[in-house]
Length: 165
Image (cartoon, rainbow, N blue to C red; front, top):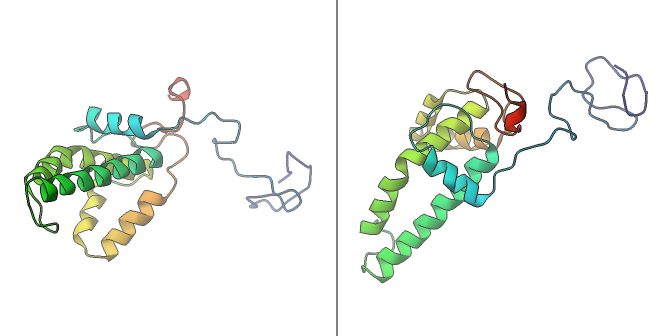
């Protein structure tokens, strides 16, 4: 395989050029491909807009910004329960239960769409019930980069909509 950057011949299955380090893969995503990024406010907005949408895909950024939002809201709810309502710090108070119920469906939907991004069924979220090992597997999958280009669950969420089929 000939490197387009430096012209050196490389092994046919090489992923990177041995001379200059250029990427030799056939990935449709390159440094020249415009990438759609999701920031914190947009991830929260998408989480609530698509709260019952278990179809399609969510990028890593959307998933992790949503997770940060859930953690921050949980901390605020715990503070309110502890300071205002007098609930013990390690107990879930009224505000905590309301927040948990309000974010349950969006949280599940974002998780399912994140699994779809790596071409896995949303049913794999049931691994949360397998203590420790299941959590580690879900964490590794949540960290993993999504499939480049469309997969059976839909178009790549990192691609601009004008380039999606």
